[in-house]
Image 1 (cartoon, rainbow, N blue to C red):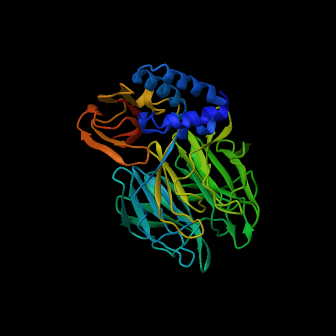
Image 2 (image 1 turned 90 degrees about the horizontal axis):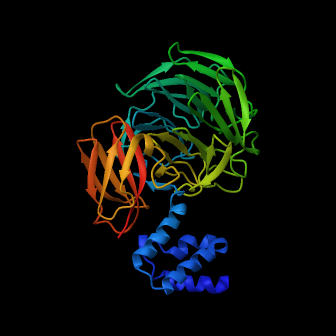
Image 3 (image 1 turned 180 degrees about the vertical axis):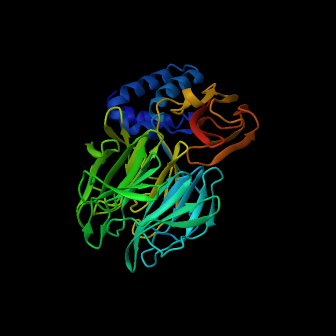
Length: 445
């Protein structure tokens, strides 16, 4: 049987194979050129009229290789403020805070709190300072900060601290460099590192450390990649990372650098993506780094890349669920990512959760924090919480993000029925206290 005949035959017969709610031809067709002999074996098994359950096991075990590598974007409640781009924000506890931005005509100074547990937005006290876009945002010591930016009157250098307990703002020492917009910011040891950015058509490479306790600024070594605007910045453990952005008004970069605060030095790492990106996003989830989207000069892109710190290599993960986007914001929090707003030619207000990729059907934290068994299961699944917390909030979602089951249990373990769910792959989201982990579960017939 040649490949073309095989594909036609497999496509015809795949209508019969409705296991796991997947159309297997569509799932695997992108790889049939290298794998079709395996599928031919499946057809032979069908012709041998072996029992349905054996066929299910055969296909299920093989398809786990593909399913386990997937990652998911789930749309959440839209940002309720005006659609906008070039916003800023920070993360405190279970909440993401989004502030400022522009719709292309007007800039804003409003502040919104997103509760990642309840998927709800609450408007907070606006920044008591001029509206702005392209500001830097960061959090340290349970306080949020917004620095610099730009509005119709020019670039800014002021710094403001937000206290979520009192829902109030306090002005702090101004950024001592040239007023600017689109600087980067990341936090190490409760000190903020702010720099790069631009003013009018000028671009900057200077970096500064802000001591959140003493309210003082110290100039550091310039960013290793040279002048830059609209780059991304984030921290993982005790290291800062910066990449992408404009190096001139028309030159976009895809370089990636790490900063060592002990030696005040920069080291270049592998480039991310294929093309240079203006206004990309970068964020960290635990000890994993992600970067992507942005504008190549032709159009905004939706690609997202994950950096493997052990190999120093970038690889693609699921593209952003909202499509091509630049000037968006993204954050890592409690084992997941959140991303939204931005522009694709017009300002946006959508909001998405990113469930990162992992190896195997369990989450990457499974051995340390969560035990799920049996998996796959046809009747019941037990979840045991191995991280701190005495109660569990459990959600089971399908791969499009629709909640199929949702309940709370007052103890650190729970056994629940999955017999009422259709056979397939689901996302298990378990929250306890301020911890949230995800796992994939398989429900069989």
